[in-house]
Figure (cartoon, rainbow over the protein chains, first blue to last red):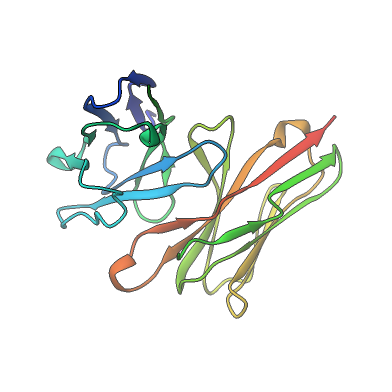
Length: 111
Length: 114
């Protein structure tokens, strides 16, 4: 069956531009997570959606970051006015209960 | 920070040897999970051990959990070159505002030489 997909796989943008990253979770998974991973580092939690509950946004590093999950399925992570320190791999995961299933990630490079 | 820590940060062994990675965590957990990551992309779930379990096996993987010490270990037996990857532990919080969140460690980079 289809796994978690993310698009684009790579994104190069100029400093100050806005970017949108997309995540298509596995159908039926109620939970969706966004993480950020800088080179050689662990995963940094960004935001967590669970069903119809209010999302846990406590990991978002600044108000330039926001995320939506429409219809309990597809999610979009938006970064406004990108900065060079935003360069990282952005990973999305969905979960039916406890184990998380990760997408391949979007590698964002801000020049 | 509520993130855990793995040690060692890097491990280099020969094929056929066993690889042991350790993980410590800080929160009260529902379960602890181990993931594998190749080439800095998506993580793959390997094994989950619940807080009331002490040991679990899956193929060549053996995981232990000591909740009194807030630690876990992952043992890969008879390692293969294809096991080369980064391995992360992740603890699932079981209460409070962090319910449902996974806290990842920084990972252990395992290299298995043929």
